[in-house]
Structures are given as C-alpha cells and as structure tokens.
Image 1: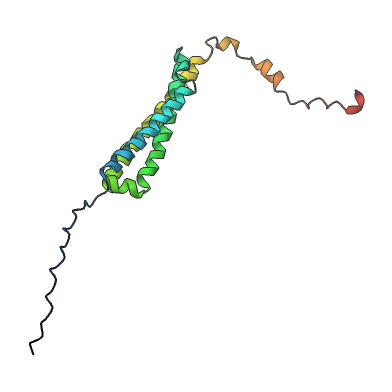
Image 2: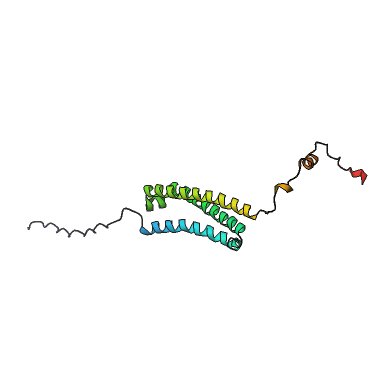
Length: 164
C-alpha cells in the first residue's frame, strides 16, 4: 500500500486592491450649491424685470421706487439664503464645511442688512420725488376751516327706509 496523498491546495484568489476613496463629497456639489444660491438672486432680479421694473426707470421718482423694490427683493432673497446657510443641510454642509458656511452667513447677513436700508432710502426718496411740488404753507387749511371740518356736532341721522 502506498501512503495517502494529501490534496494540493489551490492557489489563493487574488485580493482586489483597495479603492482609494475621497473622504469628501463629489466636487460638483460645491458648484451646484453655489449655482443654486446665485440662481435665487438672479431669479428675483428676473421677476423684478418681468414685473415692469425696467420700464419704470424713465423718470427719477419712478426709477428710485423701482430700484428700491429691487433692493428689497434681493435683500429678502439674501435673508432666505442666510437661513439655508445655517440650516445644516447635509449636502451644503459636506460641500462647504461649517466654517465656510458661517463666514458666508456673516457676509450675506451684512449685505442683506445694507440692502434693506438702501431699500428704505430709495423708496422714501422715490415717493418724495413723485410728490407734487405745489405744496406750500399758504395752501394749508386755516384754523377756522379745520374747526368747521372737525366740529363735534352729531352727524345727521340716517335716512329711514319709509321716507323714500
């Protein structure tokens, strides 16, 4: 009898090389989120133009009011963007990082605050420029006409339905 033969082990299967993975999100997330943010601002400007904002730039008063409306719209869009910046949206936070989002939040906040004040100034100046120029102290009502208009007499009774 011969000695028992042991089976020959099969050669080991090749182990695939580990795939090098990036630890961060895809690169296009950052570009996509920045494009979306700018898209909101551009959309607001387009809606202003579509609503007749460009046509109102003819005279000074209307131009100031129209530009005041535009600054108010952009300021409100930036306030909305501020909320998104600090809302910790996973896609945005992974693409930019919390530190960069906090810095952008600060810049957007100051920008929206300044635009809000520019809105108030432009709207006020525009309505003042639209006001008639003929207002003078000589045309204001005198005290006797004011007294007559604001007398404390009881109002006339309502006509009854039977008197008609």
